[in-house]
Length: 296
Image (cartoon, rainbow, N blue to C red; front, side, top):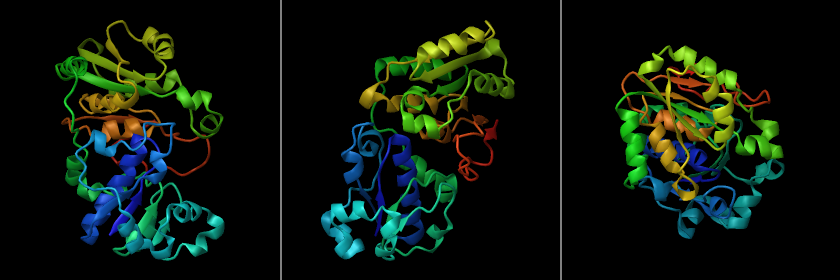
């Protein structure tokens, strides 16, 4: 049995789940999820996977945790073993991601393991794209408002444009870690797509629509049609990802949320523009993007 620790926002949870599902297929074993930590957080929407998608893997029971971790299975010990200082106490069944880019240790794990990390690389699960797409099919019907938006998106060449500012500006920790993308990035991305403005709908998703209007929309050619999606909030915010995945092309932010909006997009001929600089630090992002995505 493989148990994957689930943490962070929806995009993070999807990377963790996708890794676990791919490994469970490769190892011919079951996947279960450890959700204690994400359920105790209040900075996102908690554990979202089962509410949003048709995911098939259940939350790990106490018995299942014990079968993998033995005496290390209690919640307080699982949390304590995150620390590198006592990493030598984890044992061979408790695996922690070594770094942000693809971690080769994952290739040598056995069938009974607890995995902790973010695992943000398609390389972990690209061989099982169809299976992952099935797991991440949306389970709920679109609201009337989102149905109208989806219709507009699909009746013309459309470009999903995700602008994340929010915590990247206001949160001291995040603002020191993640690059806040400038209007120039989005202008260059549109130019790179080389599409006819008159025949294109730009669909903006952002937590700072005032900034988007002032710094991007007001500087665009008047030939572009545009739409701002701002009604999906709180527990309904996942619908932005759903709409992103319906667009003809994607311009993503340095955000796992719009990364997945683009990855779930199965539109023939779709192009994805992504930022070279995900972080302000020198942390390697060498395996972050699929090979066909365009980095600028």
